[in-house]
Image (tube, rainbow over all chains, first blue to last red; front, side):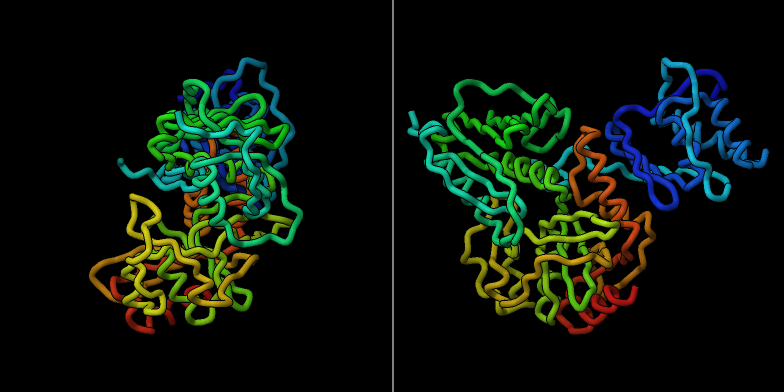
Length: 132
Length: 332
């Protein structure tokens, strides 16, 4: 269970790519990737420079999140923490400026079932190497 | 002692590999092996090429072992250093990039040169080329592509999964191809663009049963100890089929299936298209190198449709399969 204290930030080896309607996060350590809808990304983006859980919850209320969506918001943050996409930061929590989602919807994050390949055939070919 | 001239004395040979102009400084068997691989890139790009110096020579001592901070391959690890990459192979070859000078220095142990065991130079060259292509703004894609009348499909399948057979079957009916295995992809002004690198197909001798014009492929040498396939210049068999650039509109995810002779199609979600495309390229562990690759793939996935094609054994024996495939490419 999350506490509301402390500051979290993305690990250096998590790559975020913004899409028209959300974003994908790729963990370069595990090679799992995650799809976020627009609201999920608006929440997650606050951790790019470090933010506290509390400040993210407050910002979501300012954006018009109904109280009934708090479990979904916490579930997104829980996933980010549990998957170690965000880790405790050392600096004080100051939420960065992040654009509100165009229209608030209940946020989601989906983890792909299979990670991308960890060991490649070659620098060009992402196939799994054959046993030699 | 094997006579391999130092790189300062070695003859220089030039190779055009997509957007790169490789200046190869090597001699003897090293030159022969590297030239053989570089010479496969037979598509000439009509753009100013970016020069890359590649120097290969006998190793002066044991190679430092890379740990794979950037990439782990079957026979090679790659690390990130201050001015580029450093790679070492399981048999002791090494390659050090000097990115600020646009050069690579490859060292090969005496024993490998003497035994002519130089397969790992292919791994090193694939690193040299992919790093160069990425620096030029392109993402290497391990896929085939076919195009016709403004439609272009990226064809994805595992190695041996039928990319070449599908490509060959389509070019016989008027489609053109950008390649059956190696492509480059970029996004400019939000538009994805594919470019061809080579028009050489990797064909299995059994494909003659469907495409008699390929001839007795079994008489050609295998190009690798790990496959029965042969390298064949496709444009010599099917003249005029080579395409240079195209805007992808579809992704085809191929799956071979025993037990029927049909083609079964199912539309892919955007998430599935993204997943399929991400699995066709090597994503290094270095975030600075990975980020532009993921951006390009994500932007491409967001702008194209996709279909999963389950192709039954023997489907190519009848014309109905091709009609189904063309419908799948065109109607999504």
